[in-house]
Amino acid sequence: MKIFLDTANVEHIREANSWGIIDGVTTNPTLIAKEGRDFREVVKEICEIVDGPISAEVVSMKSDEMVPEAQDLVKIHKNIIIKVPMMPEGLKTIKRLKELNIKTNATLVFSPNQALLAAKAGATYVSPFIGRLDDIGHVGMDIIRDIMIIFENYKFETQVIVASIRHPIHVIDAAIAGAHVATVPWPVLQKMVKHSLTDVGIQRFLDDWEKVPKSK
Ligand code: G3P
Image 1 (cartoon, rainbow, N blue to C red):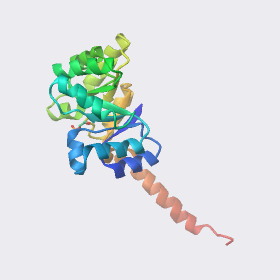
Image 2: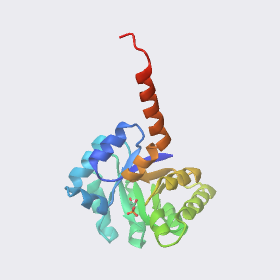
Image 3: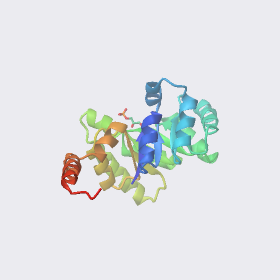
């Protein structure tokens, strides 16, 4: 499974990328706003750090405006993927961008039907938001399992990005479901790498090393 970082924080992206485990980055207007920086400047910097798909979202609501907005965004870098909200104007945009050879990520997907429509329109990726479904009392991961079966049944090339991840178990479940990508927030990535027994084990090895006689 590919791991994307779900953030626009370049320090976190730089650090995670140095671990050799980051395949791409997803951003959205909320994540960009948190950084308080110019949108294009931060996206360009992310593209210079990570050599992989970098999602940048359009904010127009009409396809006739989304398409030129997307065409402008892809000028930032060859790895830009256009995040398009899941709605009729978004589907139109996905179809038109595919014709222009521009890759898309259908975002704000909350049902297998929405994922099916986005795949049929030609989305490169779909992003089901599982945490937000959990938040309202659904089992978000259920839609990932269903989408994976549907895409496999009809051999769609569209890849599934499990998004709105809240904790490490979401990542494990995404991998068990065979999702193509999990886009992981920085705090979750930090929890994935750590284990209290690893910390205790490292400390014990360091303490015991002190007791080893040294020749110099
Ligand atoms: O990239 C979009 C998605 O991951 C948002 O997550 O935590 O705002 O539901 P969240």
